Length: 289
Image 1 (cartoon, helix red, strand yellow):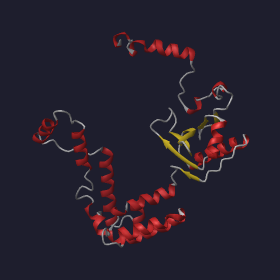
Image 2 (spheres, one colour; image 1 turned 90 degrees about the horizontal axis):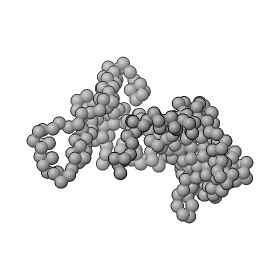
Image 3 (cartoon, helix red, strand yellow; image 1 turned 120 degrees about the vertical axis):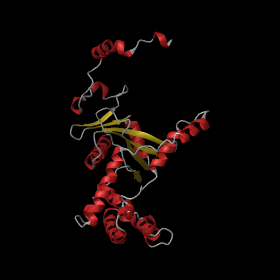
Image 4 (spheres, helix red, strand yellow; image 1 turned 45 degrees about the horizontal axis):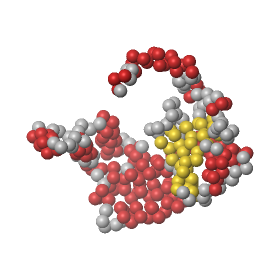
């Protein structure tokens, strides 16, 4: 029964002492993570730890077996993505490569990464190719979809999304500069740029004056996030006394949720940048940064 289970705080020292007698100490840094040879192989002799790169670009590649890696090579379509929430301790992200088979999409390779730089992603595929060649396995997918983000493309995408904050009279000039840089980075982005231009710049349904709100910075709220937070807090409390709870909130004139500190800081920076731009103390490039 639950009453018979010891309280952890009362047995903490004993439990940790017992653990340290049978297991290695918990690593405190990436350098402390040392995988013994006995854990690098499966029981059938297949290598499990395919690649272990040292700090500063520490990453560990895990493959279930050569058999599964060979199956990965037969997949025409690969998908890869990373998650940060469930990354191993001391690492930044857990990255996995999946292949599409006739039974669905399956994960064949798992990587623990301490960063997300282009150099680290290149290391992953160099190590996989080397391991595959060593075992006479061909890796030649027809399609590869990854979550890796090009830094330059990400910067220009942020500039594109930031057009509503640009002075209205400069919208077209800034867009042309963004489009020109995009075309140098991504060759087949032309259809997307044409759609954006046709819909949000020269179209009649969503002309720039309708979605640009540079003039409203510092004078009114730019979003209704405060109301979203208010409704979310109400929805979280819905139960069999829903109407009573809502009535109490309304009668007490409960205010909307306070804006988070980082969002208040961003609004302050935006207002200051607008003032500097209007007084010609900075140019449009500095304003975008």
